[in-house]
Length: 359
Image (cartoon, rainbow, N blue to C red; front, top):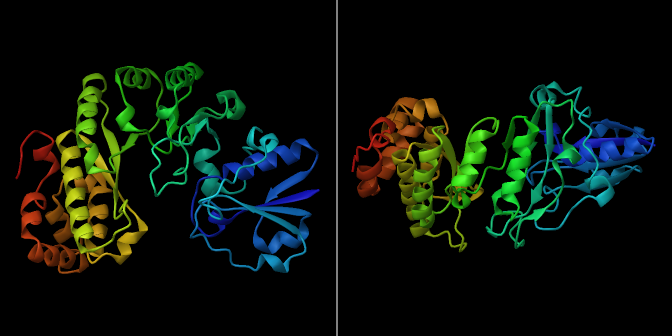
């Protein structure tokens, strides 16, 4: 058969990361003597069977799939975010087809030399915004050899929370033994960090930035304690995702929005004080907030380290677009809530990260 594979996110300009499920499907069907190819919607009639996958629920499908006589199989979190939607085991455990994206340089330029996969899956945290919110633990999923191609010099891991797995130390040791640079695209759970894990990461050929998350101000004590341990054993600076605009109680009233802005500044300052960079992640609800502009300013400020390290929030908001929207967002908020602006608008990386408290 001729098997067509559609990466809906790629066609909607949604990602430059290859679709792992499609790579595995391609590998499996090739092993059975079929031909596979990454295609567009216009090519559907030319194929005996088509697999269409998307990761993001906002990715648009610009055609009526019912129009085609070709069998079309849809899958991915973009279609079924809250459902169990896995490949059959015989496909799931096929080594990915790393040639699938060879003609798409916008994807393959960086990842053509990377082996991609999961060693573990799921997580016990049950965060309500996560695809794994109904899971209770992390489970072993595959061996490194299952997806690591000997011709690829790097390893990219998509694990949800690898440190939540009881076998985490052995897993990190095996990654170290590969001798290859590796990185976790989903970040690591900093609340589970300890000296042994830090040592293994330091001794390994870790690629890129160490990325963690500081999503809840209630985790302050654990985050600060572990930052002290981290800096004791590893001098490399680290980055934290800072989730904003998400209410675990689904109560998006005026008090929530104000507290969320305040707690975001608190987390940013705590990271500053501990020589760690924040990266603000805006949950989609921010668009409904009366402080929508503040969320835009906050992410613009923190998510550009070269600006964040040089400017306070006030300086960024004023200099980005003098007399423009950024300045208006900041000044409007400051007029209504001077108690927050006084505490946080003028804190700077150079001062706070060196132990100077601007409050």
